[in-house]
Amino acid sequence: MADESKTQPSTTTPSTSLPNSATETNIKQSQAGADPNGISLELTPLRYATHRGESEIIKYLLEAGADPNRADWNGEKPIEISAFQGHLQDVKTLFPVTSSITACLGGVVRHVCSRKAFQKRKRKAKEVLLETKLKAEDSFRNKEYDMAVYWYAVAGLMDDQDATLLSKRSECWTLMGKAGSTLADAKRCITLRSDRSEAYYRKGVALNLGKEYAEAADAFLKALKLDPNNIELRNVFQ
Image (cartoon, rainbow, N blue to C red; front, side):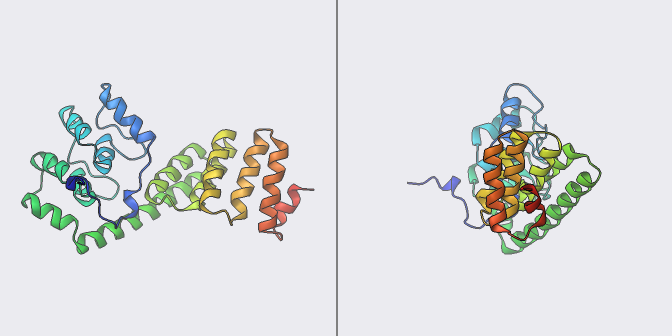
């Protein structure tokens, strides 16, 4: 029989899409004695653990001093994340240590999962995503490519289906001379949108940067086939 405390609703918001790398590393560092409130890509270890339903890690982080009242980019506290994800056992753990919660335990779950709360969460997520994209674009224009990479990564946490974010971040890596990272993001972009010439162009740039010229030419050719009138792509072959 399935564990009801781990049942997740089928409807999610952009804020519920999280990675398994940087923030996961942050949790491990907290377990090793690092700051339990340390942030990686705008996420605290507790925020990440509540999303994943890592009950034992949540308890450990609270004992280590993690702040259960610290809201994320969407204005949501860990208890709200647990409730929305359907991790009821974690809600019970967080309930006694979360301030400004006047409702009963069941009331918290009903409120967080209500249509009104969902619509509010969705609106807020869109606002924050737009703000984050603007920060990334500003950083790019100012040639602060490391910061642009950071903000594109944060935006990607909120919308992991936006191939443009990956393409932009890939371009940043190129300008920083990071061939491996350029290629990794280009490949992810192709996975999401194999019909976009820009994705293959980014792959070609990455391979060219890594001096893999034959493979780069193949990638550029695929890009040109998808967009035969693109002057920039035509110039690549001249």
